[in-house]
Length: 51
Image (cartoon, rainbow, N blue to C red):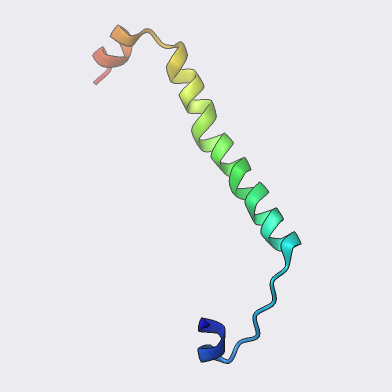
């Protein structure tokens, strides 16, 4: 609907959508999983004392 108002052609390409999904999943793994794994290995008392 917005593409009609802006006079920009809309082309749905599943390959682009799949690539963007995989890219965002990879970034999610790097910035969320690895720090969470490192925090899970820490002693809870030491983690709270760090503040």
